[in-house]
Amino acid sequence: MEGGTRNNMRRQVDMSFSSVLTRSDISAAPITLAKLQNPVKQGFDNLGGDLKKIHRSLNDFSKALDKRFKDKPLPTVNQDALDHELIKRAIGMHFLREGEFEVASAFADDVKKQNGRDNILSPHLVKAFKEMYGILEAMKAKNLKPALAWARQHSASLEARGSDLAFEISRLQFVWLFMGDLPRSLSKALVYARQEFGGFQSRYQQEIHELAAAMAFSPNLADSPYKRIFYNENAWEELGQSFTKEFCSLLGLSADSPMYIAVTAGAIALPVLQKYQSIMQLKRTEWTTEDELPVEIPLPRNYRFHSIFVCPVSKEQTTDENPPMMMPCGHVVAKESLDMISKSIRFKCPYCPSESKPADARRVII
Ligand SMILES: [Zn+2]
Image (cartoon, rainbow, N blue to C red; front, side, top):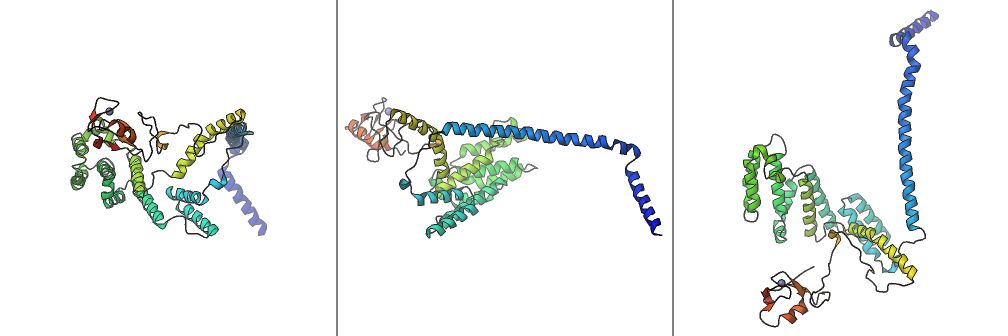
């Protein structure tokens, strides 16, 4: 009885195998396996080749680093001259400004534990940046409602700054209603325009006229003169940037994190300073003027702050006491020079034939 069952089972197993593999399949199995192995081997070989390339580049990079910085200590910093509290605050603020709220709060907690002082991040700023990132997130999902609400809430301050943000948001909302979700809806966009553009009429007449004129081309906007407004791939990103800039400026902050700017500017300046240091060592001389860089380091235009102005008349650098003054013709001289040349009621600009009155000159803030 038992043996019979075993035999039955064996037969069943044999049958089930034979239903999958015929005799010819079985003889072909080693070939099939080899065929399967080949691509796998090929894959690993390729992978190995790629890794070799990466390792080679890494090696070259570290060799280049060693060569560049060999026996050349990096310029050192006088530790006492650093304000460590300020640096910690700058780091915390950087995390906050990058939207890394958890990292920022963990960092602030650590500093608090270390110093037993107050939190380096003000709750007001944490709340503000959370709001900013919330609005930016919505913007990424093509939802402009929170941005519009924010711009409306701060319209007075934005207008006082001469900001175009509120109109820019409304314009993109109009373009998006018209171009965005399918089916395209001219009527939705027009209803929106009627509701929202009234308040912008006086300041943005030209732009609103453009949008209205574009509607005449609505079946074929891509070939119209208004293509740039309706087919701007970067429109959302640009709006995000101007929103960030305005939001930060209402908080009294720059659009970019100062930490990021300082580190990037430092990275640009470091090789120049290093070269300078080695030259100075060779010549056995030293730069003695404090708080002033011995060489000019060109930085990108948007990294230039607090530009200096040298008066073309006196050849002196302007200061708070002797600020640059612009005459109505647009030429600028230092205040002392202006006082000198403008003894009479009317005087001639030293650079062009225009005549102006001393009272018309305006201080230039740079
Ligand atoms: Zn002039």
